[in-house]
Image 1 (cartoon, one colour):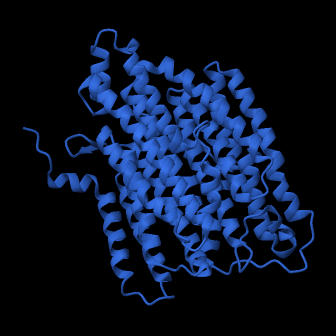
Image 2 (cartoon, helix red, strand yellow):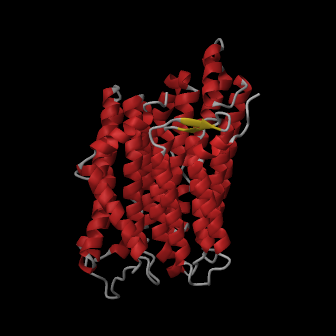
Image 3 (cartoon, one colour):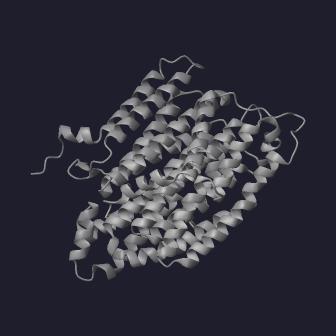
Length: 485
């Protein structure tokens, strides 16, 4: 009989064990922390994340399974765990001053972020559909709460309600796809599903299997905000606290992409011809709708919401191109996307002082005169989002589009280049406000938060470093997908 649990499982899942312990410790310490003096809980959370990151890095290079083969610690999972933990550390640094300024300095905010990250890490390591679903809900439930953390603001309550309803619906769709796969194969393990489908006669033309694939694609499409499953995203981005918006954009959506890659590449590779066409169409729609609608936005959080939708379209190019070069380019672009998006949202928080929320493009008016360094940082993030050299965004798009061309998807790459050119229009609206307009009579205040400035510095350095010297990061992405199939 297969042993359900042994102590070695805890060693394999050590990063998750440590992070969950830190999250629970934060919730307990919040009861004894004096009101208005809870910054140290944020710093403690960052230390916990960095400790977890060290353990993940030490596990690099080894592939180990745990919990009867339902959990896998391999380079693919470890790559995403590193990405999630780095993003979480930066988001926590961004949150410390923001919570104090909004008057909601509560320790449970940090604990919920850690639990959401814990769910993302489980999703990255899940090689069983049940563990995948548990990780998905572990991530989603804290984010539902975080989206409505500003309880006195109506739009924050609206964001939480919309995200809860759409998140619950998408989870149900995913669960329906899981049930159909189990009914067809009698297995929940991804490799076992693939083996059962290959052994069956005529399984890949079975309408029930095609429907299961569509259900999973639709459910994951909601999680990654692909068109036409994106409608709730702009309202959630606008209404949620800005650090939570950054978490959604730079971590939650990427976690959805990670499980999408794992499920489609490992469990149902026999349907690759069908799902490649499906994701081809989704990629075209997502990048085009995201970029075109972003042009009309005056709220920068809504603009970045549609921008993130467009970038999901770019990320799907790698899945269409596959196998190794396309997927490795996708992994590289997730790292690039996380850094430049986190930097952009950090700039929004930098301008969130007093009555000014930093959420409108007009709030950036005259920033170059008030703080040339801050304006230069925002310009770097905007250029990277648009894919202008020598930033990381250019390198990421170069490899993604190159993979598509190599596999014969020339028109997909051409349309992606056109969309990148369109994105320059709305990104440059922010640049014009910063550099070509004078400071308003009321002045322009910046947040004094030092942790926020540390997060900004890391994002700027990372965005430039990948753009100037992408070799090591591309090698890391290639090593992460080497054993995925």
